[in-house]
Length: 123
Image 1 (cartoon, rainbow, N blue to C red):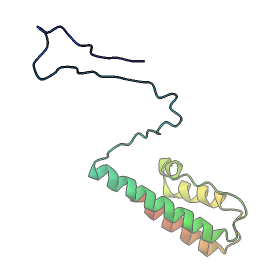
Image 2 (image 1 turned 60 degrees about the vertical axis):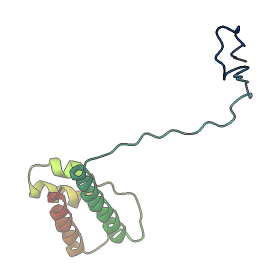
Image 3 (image 1 turned 30 degrees about the vertical axis):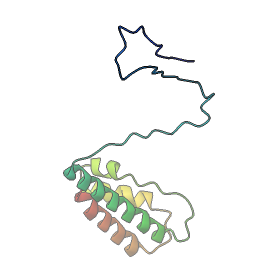
Image 4 (image 1 turned 180 degrees about the vertical axis):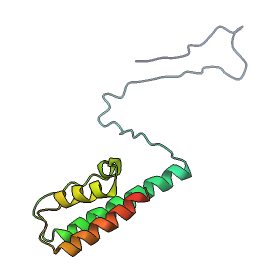
């Protein structure tokens, strides 16, 4: 494809712009396209909430790794599900049922559940 500005007659031409020409040529296929990413900015309050949530989830992951050392199967503890429950007693019984396959002593499991409920209340 070529596009150009052809020379004009003398009455339309400006004195300093004689013989100007613009050419567009096709260079073939574009072999590699750049990936585009969508990013979002959060306010400082929202970012602090995200960091707090992430810290609790990372703590939860690390503690589950300690409880199930060596890891035998994946245990899925959903913090949102725990927070949606009405009372701490219901939360405790739910967590005890999730951790029933854990081979650790019951006092370790109770301490983990207490710590998790304390951290979950900060969210």
